[in-house]
Amino acid sequence: MESVRVKTRVTQVTIHVILIIFSFIMIVPFAWMILTALKTNQEAISVDPFYIFPAHGWHWENFGTVWKSYNFLYLYRNTLLMIFFRVVCACLTATMAGYAFGRLRFPGKKFLFSLVLIQMMVPAQIFIIPQYLMVSKMGMLNTTFGLVFPGLVTAFGTYLLKTGYQGLPRDLEEAAGIDGCNIGQKFLLIMMPLTRSSMVSLGIFTAVFAFKDLMWPMIVCTNAETTTLSAGLAKMQGQFSSDYPSMMAAAVLAVMPMVIIYIIFQKQFVEGIATSGGKL
Image (cartoon, rainbow, N blue to C red; front, side, top):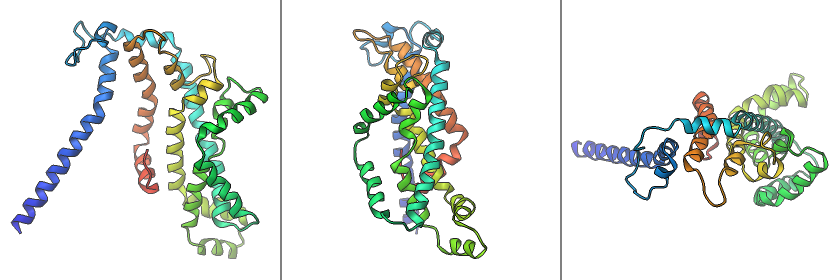
C-alpha cells in the first residue's frame, strides 16, 4: 500500500515538473518580447545570448512613440469591430444552418451539406480573389464591412452547430409541437438555447481566427486608418533594417485586447474549449 502511494506521489510530482517546464517554455517568447520592447535597438540586436535585461535603463518611451506613430486607437477600433461582427454573423448564420442540416428534412440536404464539407477541405486562400472582387464591385474596400465579409458565413461553424443539434433528443421538439409551437418557436425557444456551449466555442474560435487574420486585412484595407492590428504590425517591418524595440512594443500593445478579453471571459473560454473538444 505504501509503495502504491509513493508511486502515485512520484507520478504527480513528475507531471507537475513537466508542466512547469513547458509553462516556462511558453512564457519565454512573451517575456523576451516585453524585455526587447524596453531596450535600445543596439541592445536588441546584440549577439550576446545572455544580454537579457536592458543595460542602460528601461526605455518605456518606446511604447509612447509607437502609440503616437501608428494610430493604435484606429487599429484597436478596426480590430475589435471586425472581431465583434464576425462573431455575431458566424453564430447567427451557423446556428440557423446547423439547425436546418441537423434537424430538418428537405430535398438536396445531403448534397448541400457535402458542399459545406468541401469548403472546409479547400484552403481559404483560394477564395481570396473572388471575395476581393466581390468587395471591390460593391465599393466596400477600406471599410469595416470589407474586413467582416469573409466571416459572414462559416463552414466550420455550420458543421459544429449541426453536430450540436444532432446530439439533442427529438422528444423536445415533439413535446413543443404538441404544445402548439411552430418550427420558428421550436428553434428560437427550445433548441437554440440548448446549443449555447457550441455557440460559445464557435465564438471563441471565430474571435481568435479573426484576430490572427493577416492576409485579408492587408489586401482589402490599404489605408492606415482602416487596417487591423495584425496588418499594422506587418507593415512596421523595414525592407533593409527594423527597429526591433518599437516592433516589440507594438506587439505588446497589439496582444493586450485579447489578453483582456481572455481575463474577462476566462470561464467561457475554458468551458467552450472543453465542451467542443477542440484546441486553439
